[in-house]
Image (cartoon, rainbow, N blue to C red; front, side, top):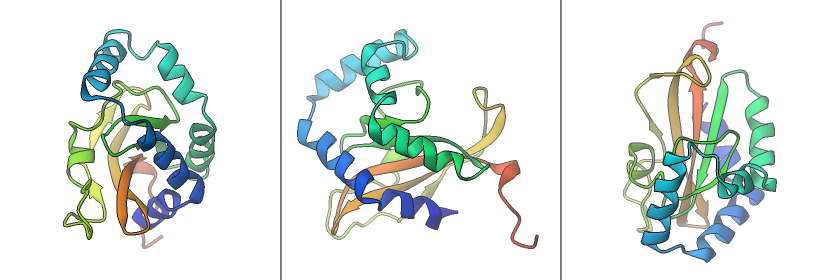
Length: 161
């Protein structure tokens, strides 16, 4: 399953989308302002709709539909800002969350693991026990962002079946 997610993160379209997002380099104040408004408005903002309607969000939504156990996806840039998603997230900035902090590293080579799997939690939006699997997005040797996939643990095939 981690390898499947790493393969998605390595797709040229994903890498190109992260590079384009990183080129914008929002200020910390702008990220925090958008994050505050996003949370307050529960993602009902033009910026959220723009991200949700993007080509890369559509591509990732197709990838999520390929496996019954993939439920949600969030693509971030190097600041933890949301660049793509298949459903509106609860907040814009992922950079202060474990799923980003545990794997993102701007050092070359990275000193962090190649994946992070969160503790399982109940997800009201999908009505399932979800673990978030996060992997880095690389441009060559450089880590440029992260891809996080919410996995429905009850739907993951058992290796003995």
